[in-house]
Image 1 (cartoon, rainbow, N blue to C red):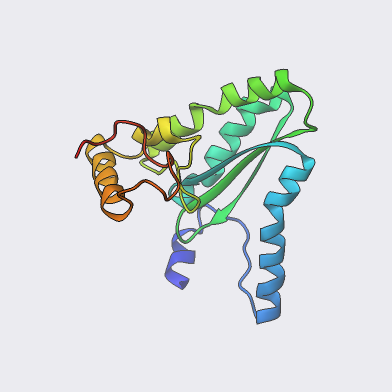
Image 2: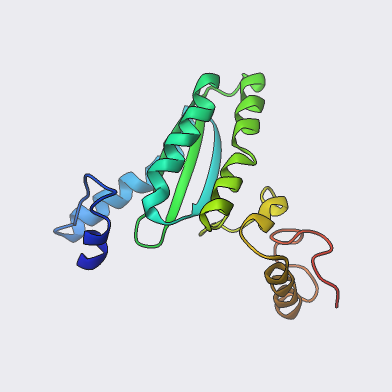
Length: 174
């Protein structure tokens, strides 16, 4: 662990190493509350991406530049060790749909293009779901997507587990 922290010294100014279970629990409580706080603030556009952690700050800053003019604010938190970043863009309130459309257009495909350029993944711990299916090719080759389809067919031949999620239609033929 110490080697990992030393290798990241050039990218981070601050951090916390827990001294007790109580401190660990307190930090996790704060971390778990970030997503809820973002949602309570207003309309949230959430990305669960995977990148080298040295790129976290850059994508947060670039995203902030793209959405700031429309009233969007960016919150980033994640897992330095495994490269998982929760990139949340929030807009105060829920009723300004014109700004929401502009923010979404500024985010997609920008975030996914950045991830492709950096060799990351469009989805880390929460899966591809329905909203990112069309961008799966930004982080997986067509061959890999086909193999994912084959695995889905083996383990879920009736298509009852998360139907229509993860893989685009026509991904594979058996």
